[in-house]
Picture: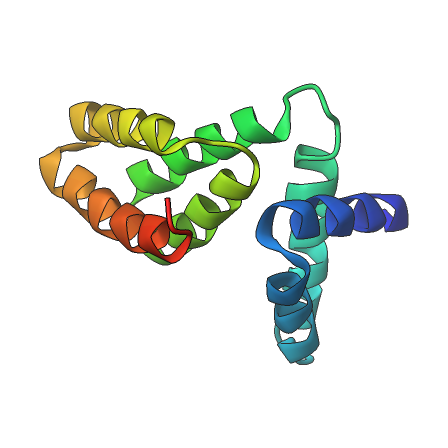
Length: 124
């Protein structure tokens, strides 16, 4: 499992950035630290670390799934990561269109609001 944690830490930092990941790990306390470690190992080490799917594609998949779930704080974080992984503005728009088709217009509007904020921050 330690290998998965190390792989996951590398993958997580590559997508979300060193600063964000270190902040989350450093701010974890006795209550939240086990979850941070498990998530890094499972989601990022086991899930993202197999390299069967490239980071850009995984980011696109995550935006779609997280958008469908309506988890907008996570969607914003992963929108930034998706851009870092090479997802273009046009691709983000297309992903939001699919979210609108399958999850409804109100959810697509939420995604557009967050995407506009992120794209402005990233100056895209």
